[in-house]
Image 1 (cartoon, helix red, strand yellow):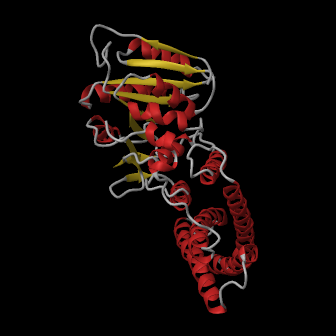
Image 2 (cartoon, rainbow, N blue to C red):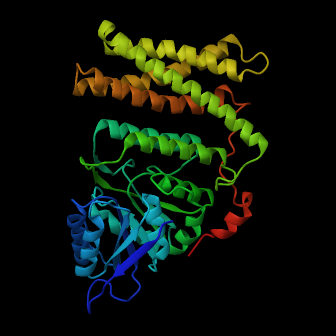
Image 3 (cartoon, one colour):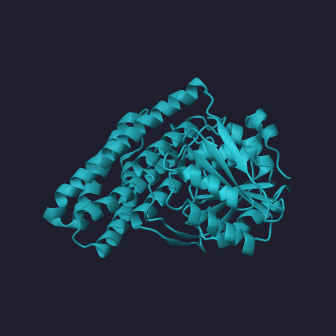
Amino acid sequence: MGAMSVIELSRPSGLVDHEVPDVDIVVPVYNEVAQIESSVRALYDFVNREFPLTARITIADNASTDGTWDRAVALANSLVGVRALHLDQKGRGRALRAAWSASDAAVVAYLDVDLSTGLDALLPLVAPLVSGHSDVAIGTRLAPGSRVVRGPVRELISRGYNSLLHLTLRGRFSDAQCGFKALRRDVALRLLPLVRDEEWFFDTELLVLAQRVGLRIHEVPVDWVDDPDSRVDLARTIRDDLRGVWRMLRHRDTGTGAPGNPQDEATSAELLRFAGVGIFSTLAYIAAFALLWPLVGGYAANALSVLGCGLANAAVHRRLARRGGGPGPARRAMQTSALLGVSLAVTTAALAIALSAAPRSLPIALAAVTVANALAALVRFWLLRTWVFRPRFRSAGPLPASADPSVSHELPRGA
């Protein structure tokens, strides 16, 4: 972690002076000079008017280069209960780790600087933590009761990513990446040393580890309006998130990324081969769909691409995983039909949505079916592990508390 400096100014009265606040609300920022002042002032006004608990706002600047830090210092100088913290290294996870570790509040929280999440959800988020009912609380855009405004591509990516977590890491939370979370401070201090990621995967790793050691995670449906000016590098974030998932999948018995036993390494290598087949199959599907689109239309192009690539995918998987004679012809036909049916249903639904929005746009249709095909691949992966090749892929199940004595004693339940 890089060096950091803290500026904290107080006046005779205000939301928080020298007292320990109930909640420390961290706002991580990186090159947000255009919106930091308006967002922090809006949050400050809301907390003063409508938030019934004492609070502090901490602006956590992670190596901004555009004047964001100067604005943060000015806000800390002019607003009671606002402080500014600067790190000389980039990374949202790094900023949260530093701010939460340095806090003295009973509950530590964070929200995105664009205020995409409606602030009315702030009290429902932290109340179960203040009362001791829960250990961790998250906002969710994917649960009943949420109201979300964002584009179809981001919606599909979000649902696909969380489905991946459910299938691979057995996540029981609905939305890992919503920028609206809180923890009891005692839980944060014990959990943070176990989290390895310093960037966007930080949230996911934190939740998976919390779940593995039996902490109670409270979910709050939120109102969410996507920021059209978001500068998140989706391709890089997806790549890094997948790497993080793979790391935690390989070391799911320890939860900390420590090396596993040789049998685990052999299983991981096998899973990697199967993932590689899936990637090449998806690329072949994209190419086939794009070539067939002008010849036979969207729905037929999708059906033919799914059929051809799905059959090839199943054949390669069977060749890689076969032991002995394998299942009989009838069972193979049933399994292959189920795998193809999943892909066809998901991609057809996505294509219908895309065509209703832009009937003649190949790029939009291609984006929709690509994301849908990736989502279907996650379902196929789960079916391959738990049904088609069950003897070869065995799920470790939820991590028992006794599996890692150091973790189980490090994170006790309760207040």
